[in-house]
Image (cartoon, rainbow, N blue to C red; front, side, top):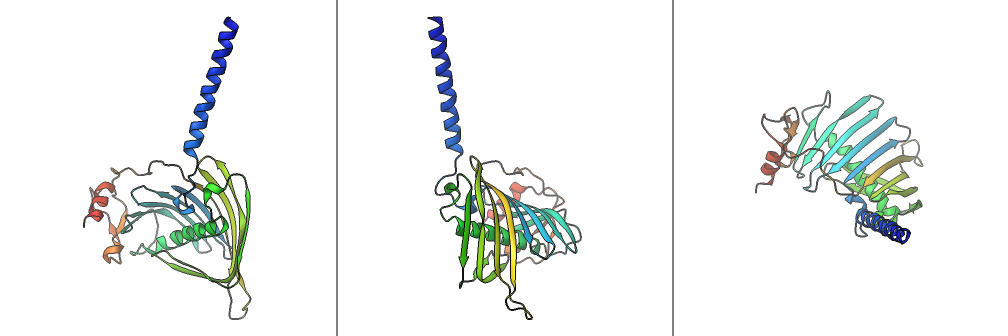
Length: 254
């Protein structure tokens, strides 16, 4: 009898553990309506073939609409590192960048353009979105006549046809995806009209809800601030006592 009771208890415990695991996995899955651009955290490595330019950008999206970008760019003329924080799409803050001019908006151009390009290429590669990626998938898409155009508000970019994107995407754990892509496009030169360009992307996308790296109480002393939506073409040091919450409230006023 005791053995039967122990066996029943063991089976019940195992069932509860499996049920709990199932709930955790189900709650952490990517919803079928989720788009590639909806990732909460994106880590993106980008190489421009033949240029010596490499960048790693980490993007953190706040549910409030803010965007934090950790920047590391390596080019033949030097290394650029720092942080960018865009508040409500109206104000840009930066810190840790050395030797940059008063206008900090150009710092955001490459990170935002390449993020939008990566999202667009992922959407072309797997139009059903990240929920359609379980195991590893191979992708290969080609366009012979239509140029690939982007407009981020900070920068525009056009990649001439014919172009091709190939690579792969895979599931790493519930709520996360990884990918590797090579984007080849026409890049005619005066002495070589058949020349092409190539950009290689690799990265990870985390679609799980999580806290923003900087809480609302974060003091912004030491950051440069530029209200580009208000027409400011130069940045200045954030005033003493200004917090992220206060800035959000300021830009949210009608």
